[in-house]
Amino acid sequence: MAAMTTTLIHVESMQTAVPTRKQRQPRLAEEERAAWVKESLSAALADHPEMAGRLRRRADGGPWEVRLNDNGVRLVQASVDVPMAAFLEAKDLERKEAALALWTDVDVHDPEFCAPFFMQLTRFQDDGYAIGACCSLLLADPRSLVDFLKAWACTHAEMQARSKPVAPPAMIQYTRYLQSPSAVRRLKSVPLYSCSAAAATTTVLFRAGPAAADPQVDRHKLAAACVDQAVEKLGSNAKKPPRLTVLSAGGSGGVNVDMCDGDGETTTTAPPSSRGHALGAAYWSDFGLGKIALDGSEPVHVSCSVVSPCADEGLVVVMTPAGGAELLISATVPN
Image 1 (tube, helix red, strand yellow):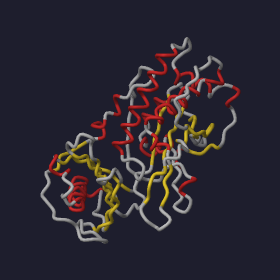
Image 2 (cartoon, rainbow, N blue to C red; image 1 turned 90 degrees about the vertical axis):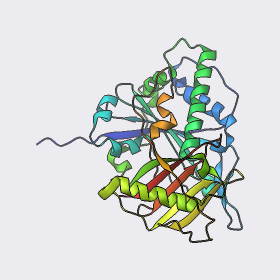
Image 3 (cartoon, rainbow, N blue to C red; image 1 turned 45 degrees about the vertical axis):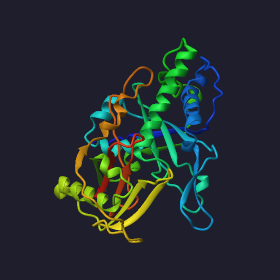
Image 4 (cartoon, rainbow, N blue to C red; image 1 turned 135 degrees about the vertical axis):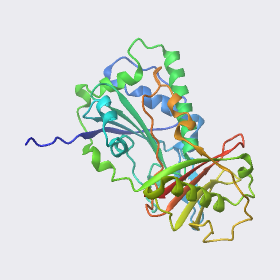
C-alpha cells in the first residue's frame, strides 16, 4: 500500500510593512513582484497607524494599550503544495485553513516585541492565491479588521491605476516570483494539519438593535443572552461555558475587557442595570468580505473565525458600528 503524501505549507519569507506614503513605481524585474503587496499595505497603514502599533501594559499593572510606534504589520509570504481547487474541495477544509493565516501569540511579558497583526499571502500550485489576516482582539475586533482590509484593497487598486503596469496583475506577479530560482529558499515547511488542532469552539453571530448600543445597557447580560442562544442553536454540538470574557468598545475609543460567569454576573464589579434585548441572526457574509476585490477579482471563498484563548470558556465580542446603528456580536462557545 502506497504511503500517503503529506501536504506542506512553505513559509518563503517574513517581512514587515510599516506606514509610509512614499511609493516607488514597481519594476518589471521578477525580484520586484512581491513589492506591490508590501507597498500598498504600507500606504494603507499610513491612514490606519493603530494597525501598525504594538500592545503594551502600563508599568503600574494597568490596562493594555496600543503604542503607536509604527513598528509595522508582519507580512508572511508562503506557498502550499496543492492546487487551489483541490484545497477548496477538501472535506477537512476548516482544519487546513488555519495554515493560510499563521499566527504567533503575543508574549504577555514582552508584548512590544510581538506583532499583534499578521497578513499572509499564500500561493497555490495553480497560481491561485489566498490572503489571510489575523490580529489580536485587543488591537481590532472583526469589524474593524474588515474595514482595514477594505481600505487596503482600495489603496492597492489606486496604486495600480496610477502606475499602469504593463506586466500581469500584481498578485499573479507575486505568485510567479515565488516560483523563480531567487525564491527557492524557505524559512520553514510544515504539514497543513500541524497548524490547527480539531476545532474546540464554535462562533455564532447576532445582531442587536440600536437600543442595545446605549452605554447604560448591561453588556454582561447581553453577552450571556448571546451565549445562551448560541448554545441553544448549536444543540448537542456545544455546551454552556462556566465563564465568559466580554470585549466591548469603551467610551474613549478603548476596549473594555470584563470577566463574568456564564449567567452574565461580573466577577469584578457589580453590573449596571440591565434591559431586555431582541437578538437577530447575523452572518460573516454581512461584513462584506466577499466583495473585496484585488486585481479586479472578488474572492472565490471567504471564511472567518474567532479563536478563544481558553477553549473551555466563552468569548463574546460586542462590535459597535461608527454610525451608532445596531450592534454586531460574536459569541464563541466550547464544543
